[in-house]
Image (cartoon, rainbow, N blue to C red; front, side, top):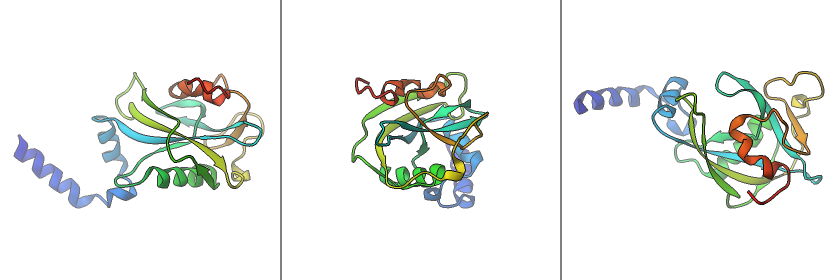
Length: 173
């Protein structure tokens, strides 16, 4: 069995791009179905102590507000992933604390693909405004829109419910 597995793995390594750039979806979904994924989440607060959340509506989490975040790539630093998430999801620059404010183990009990994360939550501060073209204004939020929140909304994704006290401004997490 190990010879067969070694042969398959060799073929996979020959056809995938540099894993530091991320994995092809099929390989990522497979990897996420057999091991926990490490990711960073960004608790971005403005001067009014509001928290920046993004609307998500996908087949894995369904519709709801969530804290911006991303999976750490092979040989990527926490800081690099934090800045890439802020830029790609929000179109903004941020600064962040050196160390996470909390580490959580998050599960999606009803599925195996993208079902287990070790999450490092970093406190972040805006250095620029988020992309105004992605701002939620009214009506039904659209995937990828952002909004400042005074408190955790009732429709926050289930996996981010453990962050509610931090979103609400309580540091007793």
